[in-house]
Image (spheres, rainbow, N blue to C red):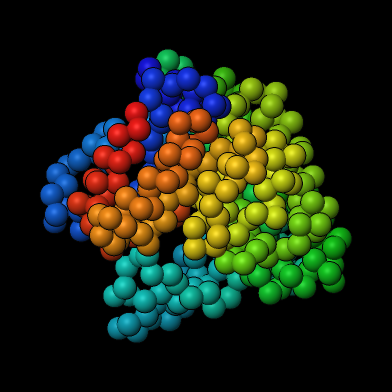
Length: 359
């Protein structure tokens, strides 16, 4: 089987020649450490580790966000920090000498009033030029017989609004101005459906789509399941009509935090793969598989903290999950977020050896 076939067979509970593999390569600091510990400097990580799935590289670069973006602007700068207004409109304080995975501090979110929304929403028109790569039709033809899975990130509902307003302001809006919530969700729906339709019109066959939400924290969702179902599920209903019509088999959602109360809602909406299954937030792929069986699949579920420990700790983290979930399919074991630089190259290679031992 090639990578595309293996990915699809794995994530749809089929019969792959071996289970598909993939991970969350992201931080430059991690790669720099690995190169100092033996990773060849010119290595393509997907090729080096024989990966079958990469949601950040093998994807359609469609813009399902504001267009045009704001021009990046430095608001303040010292030897230690930069305060920057970024392309999406937020103002953040960045530590200059501490690279990712250090997070910036949000000084101001893009929106603080309905009046600001009235200007912001003009940037959410799906017909604004520049949302699709200029060569997408050509790429559709060139990749028709590809051997790797291609997909598309579809934005989201609550998570996108949270990035616009911040958790506190958005939480008030869900009680004080539900009409605005409904209007914003409608704009996000029209944007997502419109851009997805343009991509599908090129004839490209997508293997997967991924919604992005990041709508939970350590102990539960940032909005009640009832509110999510009432205000956000209509977004999923309309988008999933297009996804089903196009025959896209793998539908994922990316949300950090404890999403256990939201899983049944997503399953009803048509999502069939959860990512990244953050262990620190009590997300356990073994327990979820016991509860939902083959209704649910996973991309993630490996505790990044354990992989910075001893080889024994790595084994104790990985093996029970492989034994419980790997053999039945619907599971690509991966870190439950981007691989941090405190994970050694030796430990990561050992982890990959454990995964391949189940082939």
